[in-house]
Image 1 (cartoon, protein in one colour):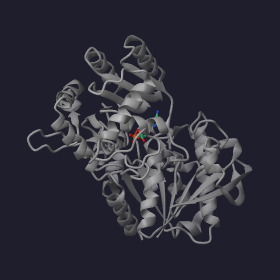
Image 2 (tube, protein in one colour):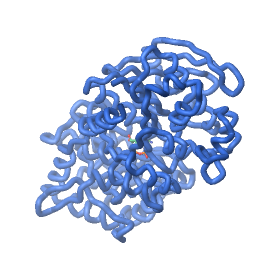
Image 3 (cartoon, helix red, strand yellow):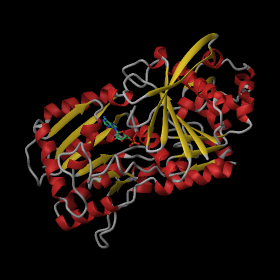
Image 4 (cartoon, helix red, strand yellow):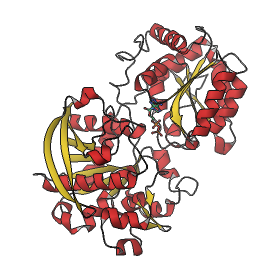
Amino acid sequence: MKIVMAAAECAPFAKAGGLADVIGALPLELVKLGHEVQVIIPKYSLIHERYQEQFRKVEVHSFEFKEKTATYTMHELIKHGVQFLFLENDSYFERDSIYGPDDAERYAFFTRAVLDFLARSETAPDVVHVHDWHTAVLPFLLKEDPHYQQLSSRVKTVLTIHNIQFQGNFSKSVFLEQYRMDESFYDNGQVEWHGNFNSLKTGILYADKLTTVSPNYRDEILTEAYGEGLQHLLGEREADLQGILNGIDTNAYDPQGDEHIAQTFSAGDLQGKQANKRAIQKRCGLPEQADVPLLTMISRLSGQKGIDVLEQTLLEFLEGDVQFVLLGSGEARFEEFFQRLEVDYAGKVSVHLGFDESFAHQLYAGADIFLMPSHFEPCGLSQLISMRYGTIPVANRTGGLRDTVEEYDEVQTTGTGFLSDFKAGVHFDEALSRALSFYHQPEHWKALIRNGMKRDSSWSRSAKEYEQLYASLN
Ligand code: ADP
């Protein structure tokens, strides 16, 4: 099959979160299964020079956008058999950050340009797979805009919801001005949702199939507690909604070959993990103590991630013998909390605000425990990466965390982490206490590390599920 993915992020080129990890990894696995895969993302100027140097300009085209002629240039980079395409338009993507205040217009342009590009391609893809709200309007345009009639008769669409909280909600005028489709689509409710133009809702209505990133989150978003208002609409499409668990790129996250970390290691030889811990302590100005548990969190700092819970927990546990390193950025109130914590617990806490891929790898490798008290978590990749590096996740039992972290069983010595369950009244403190009690019992701790490192978090199984889904469309 010829599969096209269109998304806002793709690792390692442009990453803000887990979406990028998925777009950077799943296509490689689909190519291994014998498919032809094209990935299209905007050519943001923040894409590192070392990649941009390898770009090859392939096509330049113009089309009507907002009553004007807009031009885009496609650049190509082929990696592991995947054709990555970078869509350039300086007025929209020549920025220092991936996202910005005018995203409605930027991704409307991107979506239109992707369709323009596909309509000009010699061979139509079998499947166009779009991701999150940024490209969710594509299935609607494909089906309802007569411009794409020919393409539409041959192409099927899949929409993956990576996080239903982000819906791309804008005013009616955004719909009319950016997409220039008939007003009746808004007035009759195809693209309208509670008085706004809703990009994700539009995709949910129009994509041939819907997926989300874990089986448990799939069930959750059909309920009022997690559906963010779209649960009934999803309910109407329940038969077309599948939960496919995310994997991780096991080459990019490989403790035995990771170039970012101080010393490589494996489940059979954990000496290197200690060296990574020392390297983190040194870099962060923390006492280089091997037997003090080093806790970490690498995250967007948003309400979803349970920072409110962590605030309480950290204040309690930092009175004891633990160290904590944070890498993250996001809401000012959370950033300020962590900055204060670093001052109040000098010598125990180290806070790094910002996005740093290399440092993230070092922390995954060097920490003992990864904290993830999420209120909801579509899949979560951090716990998968942690386990692969022998760092034990302490997480809340929700979404994909429930599908991927198995509570440690001290009798069978099975399991990979420790779980709170906010809905059932099991607090995060209890899960962390339990984790720390085993930290001081080396045999149990080694079993936990080994169980996590041996867990198969690769894409191979899930890529086959996507393959079956695509095949079912044609
Ligand atoms: P989400 O997509 O909700 O942000 P995930 O757990 O699915 O959460 O994926 C987060 C990804 O982003 C992981 O690869 C994590 O390591 C990475 N990440 C998050 N924050 C940072 C940061 N500040 N610096 C580097 N990597 C980060």
